[in-house]
Image (cartoon, rainbow, N blue to C red; front, top):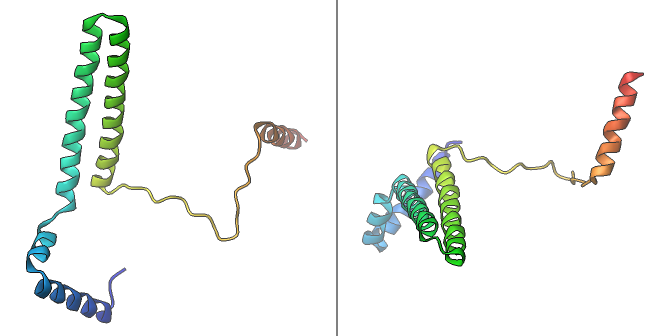
Length: 130
């Protein structure tokens, strides 16, 4: 939704005031690109993933039972964290971030147990056969 003329005028006044008060900060904010930040995070995630793989392989090569298990778990956790973080950043970079589902006001979700849902499905099946 585009800004109205009044909102745009106010935004320009705020920007001019910021430039007058702190020109160094204003220049830093103008030159910062969120895309650059996300690309940097994706690169760090890739490096962390590779490091986790190295830790995992070193743990397997050492062939000492307690150390192998510890290094294996540590390497796997590093790889998992890096993959999840990198995937989230890739999704944000591509612009496909999904908004959380919003419920209509006044509608509360009621959680039913597994048996209640099964009974409901059973009831619907018998009604459909009639």
